[in-house]
Length: 269
Image (cartoon, rainbow, N blue to C red; front, side):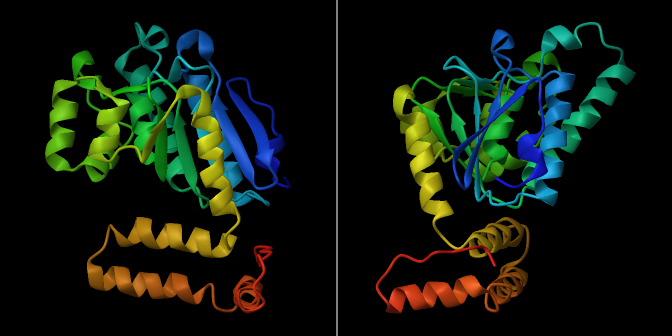
């Protein structure tokens, strides 16, 4: 894969090229249930900001955690123990930048929630384009139990995924909920056995990667941005996104392949 971000060395992240167009990004702090410390948040920022500038041939990112115990347990409270207000807020600025970097990723992100997704981990699942979960996965926005509130998009993305009233119930109570409940309420799209989660996620990623990459990126933008607008403005934005696909070689290839009854070969141009 020809992009600088995927060749960088990270201490808390593991990058694996699963196929020519699919990159697995693994949060790798298994000794701390893949919880965010300052270093991991900083490396997430570094990766996604560089990746967004040059994603090369990558068409899908799969975001997951190391092991089967935890996807991400949220902020590392051991590191935060004893922080002054100024230190806490300085660290949180990195988390805020990370949220914008992840949500600004031009290619689709699928979260493969392989275990506990608490606090910031639940927020990560909600900020992905969509998510699959292992059957044993558990979710929670537990911030109010610590005297704070979700600060990495939870009040916004969880509410958009499950609806206002359900989000209020979950965030205000801080209760833990199951993968099946996450599926029923719309936070995850499917639940799989732990041993098949990554394969099932990759299968969907392969389906996406086989489509026109410019079209996929533009469709992602049209959905994401359009939902923040009125319907009329969203329709106008959709046409702007659509028009970017018309002069591409991929459009010509897609139509030619259909008429020639063959599988298209999209090159992203």
